[in-house]
Image (cartoon, rainbow over all chains, first blue to last red; front, side):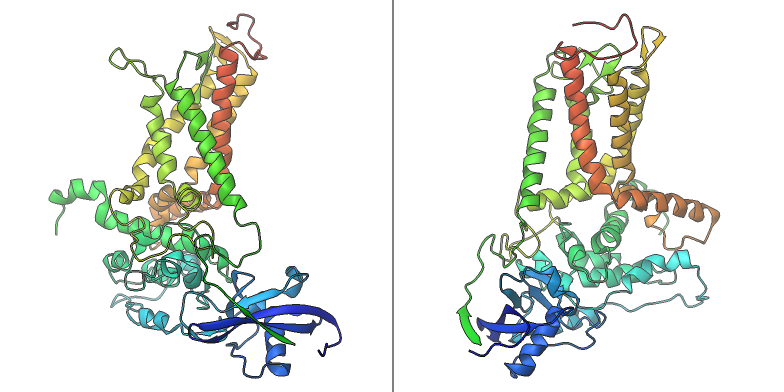
Length: 247
Length: 256
């Protein structure tokens, strides 16, 4: 056994293709200030050149290096080793909800297909494109999304219930909220939002907890959308006043 | 050095998490169960110990006594906070986790399988009508403030007792919980797309900003108000049954 200089830690990475997987354990000498992605790239460079991992910016802005570190969905580049208990092996798994391609790389293309179905920003024909910051604050929060899909991964409606056909997931409710609340957007989206499974969400807030951009997904996107759908389709007052309203 | 380790499938409550993820759902389970048992006991097994002097238990505020109603007057009131809290967006997340393991915690395997309707089908769909319980709860908040103010008057004499302070804190905490409600936040301003388009919308935005601030701590207000309302009822019950003596300024405060 060859050991490197520096503090030795044990890292276990789930490796394999498709459903054939096993954890492979590595002994790694780490340096101060490293994040989990540093360790994984170190292993790839020195010990396992065939280790598959997706990453780009290493600055928590591209959303590529999503994984489950010690069971928690996180960006590997934003997970510092000194925040982990290094007396036990650091366990790195790929995100669970999407099919594994190889090692830590999963196929998240389902999300891109869902995204295509969303009607893009649809301004009024005579929109002046002048609005105040207070009108756009809510929308800008939704635009912070880096599409790491950690929220999609942790949401039990997808993760455990596999409702891929009936539920677009928190990431796309964030996008829909940004469009629905936009002061210049003119599309009628609420019927589609209901069909996209907004009521399958049971508010357990895991999406919010894992969001690396600190978007308040549940409180600022999903719940406001639920309330708007209730307003539109299930409001008692609308039901009472419907016979008197002009079409 | 490499070493290969086989990984089994994660079953119910399975997770690779190492933290004590089960503590929070367990505490919620215990806390909500304890409150449910205590409040049911206090409301259903009423023995006239809900009132003494100027103090009326918040479970019974406003006191509704009718000849045609042979049961506890609390039942005529408690459906409002029960409905308000059951349909509350915070509590929904809490009890879906703690009581139904759906899921038990983030990245912990709960019930699996595609037979899932979430909150989309009747009767669970009723949870989405939170706003109607909110209207009633706001009205009840006003009544609780009336009760709190009334607790400073006894037989025409202005005074103060420990019970008055407890009832006032109770009204304040329940008000803060109610004013941070997600449905109220939506109805006040959240439903608007443009906050700057009219003076009315700008005013609504200002109120929405306040409610947003309170809403960010909805969980805190939910728990503090829940614990305090039970404590308030307990205090009134203990004073009324003679276990505690309420320190107050009234010379003619009734002694049970």
